[in-house]
View 1 (cartoon, rainbow, N blue to C red):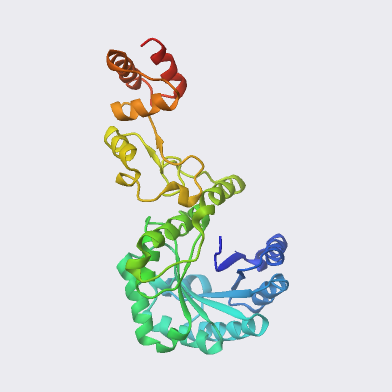
View 2 (cartoon, rainbow, N blue to C red):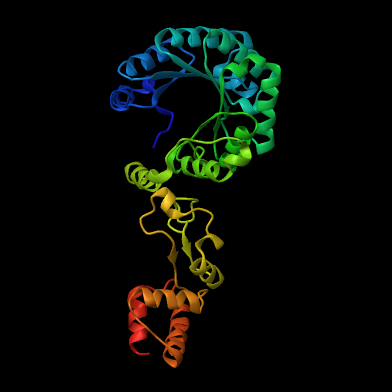
Length: 346
């Protein structure tokens, strides 16, 4: 699908994870394979080892920067953290061609400390600076302001790629990613079906399609091929065991299903009246679907009846439609077999 970077895992967490990252590194060609590492020398070495067969390798070094993380998780002051970032970014850069650096919990951190540690990371060899909204705290304007402020405070960051990582705790991850792009980010970290810690990470399919719809307005584009989105979503759903909600944007069961009579009439006349995205763009196997229920009107009923090979006219149509409405009041969805049964008596 032509994604630029695949962050395959966190090798230092376990031997199985290290082997999984190594398998991805061996198999993938045409994209950078990235491994995650805390700002700890052992993590960096484990990441480098797992990536040893990658065509293009990247190590993503991260360290906490917010006051709550410094005080209660790392239990370190700012100066030791700066030294950790410097040493581990340098160590990573000695081992792989690309290094990404994340000041974790950036959206709740002091902007002056973010600027200070980003300067250190850039000087140590980081080529991508990723700003994480680690607990899904931020509002879109706050994300945009954070990036604008970093660019103003650290002019040399313009020589690197600015990135954004969002969590979806407030349901704002996609909006925040787009705000980041609008403020100058040129990488966004995404997960298929939005899976991830707690409420999940920024949704791959939502962000890719939003950039296709609004890319011109944002002055950007993505080379990601969206035609595999639907199949990839189903694959991840199956392998992860995490079900996609029916009303999930882009890939949910209901994303291209129309139940309201007004919507059905419009989409039957011209798909674009009630569909922003052509389902064919994402490789959807069936495309737009008319769902018959209590909100459906004559246009949707007629289209579905014709679709199963039944022609009704005049009084026969009206009689069948009345029976359909009676049935639709009692069941959530009228299926094709129901239609055949009620039309047979028309």
